[in-house]
Length: 166
Image (cartoon, rainbow, N blue to C red; front, side):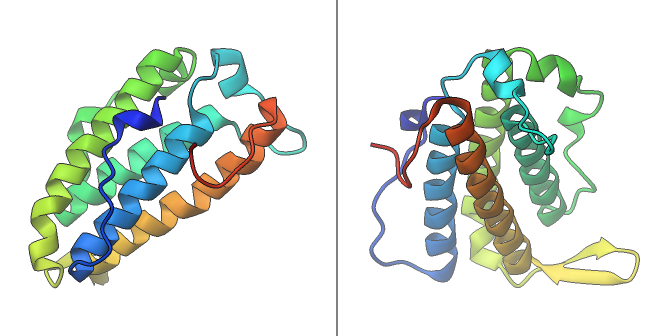
């Protein structure tokens, strides 16, 4: 992944939704930097006793961001990912990275509109509802959590350290 492909404009001020999207854009760049430029073997490398791999993190965040954004739009999940051969994508870095980049670009475009109505309430389970604000917060939290995981795993793979891309 080439983190420089993810646009990031400095936003010293903005609405609640704009600031949340700025934070998500920033963590997307961090995640792309921490998981990018690796071979299939490096993406699949495990560090026992953990079974976590960088490929799994990319796949997981692709699915989470796509599905949770779809729910915020009133759909049950992201249908375009149905039947995806995730193992196959994990063996081909260009395909894996491409799918993640397409997903974050698509979801970013959706959220750019939805931030104008963060109070919309959505069904999230049989007896549970949340609003879009909560959904966007959960997407940001999930990305932050797994970017931290990626940072630790990446250091073990090739020694890359740091918080922000150069």
